[in-house]
Length: 178
Image (cartoon, rainbow, N blue to C red; front, top):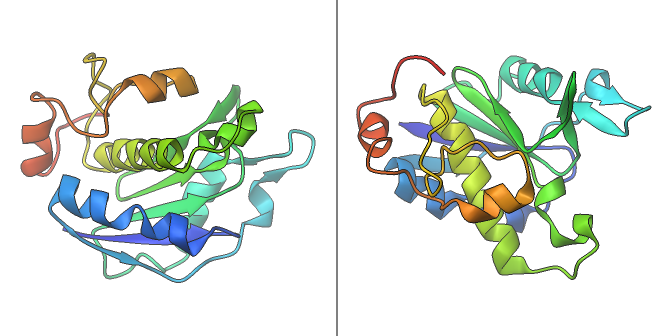
């Protein structure tokens, strides 16, 4: 499997690069960094000061920058939401996913930055959303990367790896359902 990481809007290239090796390891895949694409104006909700994750995912899918790859992960630094939901860390479709670094930073919570914690959170969310692109559903194991996270504390509790139930599904190309 070949994965491309696509920066959406202004994203620190070093922060995108930090996802490369963990994704290579977790998915036994080639991972490359694609060229940056702009933030889609249609995704911006000025009243919320957030971007609609579904519009971002569709924009990524239509950008053509994922052509030639099995999976694409869009990475942004803007705050994402879904209609009816306050925020999301990320969203996945069939081949593509998008994650936001925005709420993974300690500064969002009024705390001093912690580079190691930020990287761990980013890897957890990247692996989680890429797992969804393989058809994996949310997992009941509290340590599995596929466990649903509604808060940053829940993200911090789970690990960056698949549990023994989910791992074989990754190796075989995914499970059915979402």
